[in-house]
Amino acid sequence: MISRAGLPRIFLRALTSTSLVRSSRITASEAAARLLDSFAGAAITRRHFIDPNQLQKLSLTLCRTAVGGHDITDEPPPMGTPLPPGHHLVYFTPNGTEAELGLDGSDKTFNPVSPFTRRMWAGDQVEERTRLLSAVPKKSKSTGEMVLVEVEREFWGPQGLALADKRSWVFRPEVTVHADSVAAQPRPLQIDEHLPTQIEDMAEADNSTPVRRLRWSPVGLFRFSALTFNGHKIHYNPDWTRTVEGHPGVVVHGPLNLINMLDYWRDIHGEQADLSDITYRAMAPIYAGEEYDIRTAGVEEVGDQQTYTILVEKQGNVCMKAEIGAMKR
Image 1: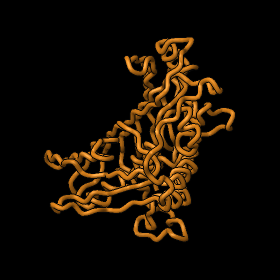
Image 2: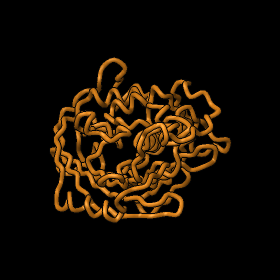
Image 3: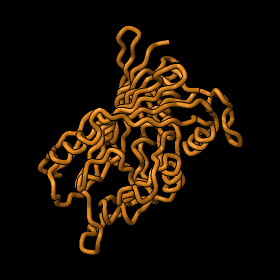
C-alpha cells in the first residue's frame, strides 16, 4: 500500500554517462533547446497497480526471502504490505515496442534529438506524473559536447503525494555501429564474472557499523533488467558492452545499487530513524563479478534530524555516494 508512512518522500539524484563520443551534426545547445521546446509545460501521466508479484520478484533478485515480516519464498506478500524505500523503481517501467528503443536498447522518452541519444544509468493504483525540468548543454575537454537533462517524477497514491523522484541524465553523441566504428576491446577483468550473486554483511575489526559486501552475476543483472523492463545493452550484452561502449564487462545498474544502499540503511539503521529523503550520485561503474562494499561513512545529528553518509566502494574507490536524511524515532 502506497502511503506517506509506507513509502516516504524520497528525492533521488543520479548522474551517469557512457564513454564513447562521435561527431555530431547539431550542437548540444541546439539539442537542449529542441528538447525543452518539445516538452514545454507538458507532463506525462501514467497509472499503475502496485501489485505484490513485482515486489516478490525484486526481493528474490536481491536475495531477500522476507518482506514486511512475511516469507515470500513461495507466495508474494499480502495486500497492504508497505513498499520498501527505493522499490518503486521496478514499477512504472518503460512502455513501447522494441522499435521505439534507442540503438543501445534504452528508453527514449526524454532523449534529446539525434545525435545526443545515449543515456547513462499491492493492489493500489498509483499515478506517476513526469515532467522535464531542464536541458542544459555541457562541454568538457575530455568528453566533448553533451546534454544534461533533469526530470522529476511524482508518485500519487490514495493519500496524496507519496514520493518525489528527481534525477539527472547525461546524453552524449550516439555511435554508428559498423565494422569501421567498433572500438578496441578493453582489457578483460581478471575475475570470474560468472560466480553467483553474493550479498553478505561483514563485521568490522573495530566493532563499528557492519559493511555489506556484494557481487552481482550476469544472471542477477539480467533479472533486474527484466523487472525494470530495461533494454539497455550495457547490462546484459557483453559484446556490445566491450566493443561499442568500451566497458570491460556488463555494468551493474545504478538504480540497483540505489536499492542496495537503501536496503543496507534500512537493515542497519532503520530501527533508530525514519527515512525522509536521499540524494545520491553515481561516480564510477561496477561490473558483474566484481566485489564491492556498502558502508556507513558518518552520521551527523542536528536535533531530531540525522544525515547518514553511505558509500559504495570498490577497492577503496568511491563508486556511489548518498546522503540519507532521517528523523529519530
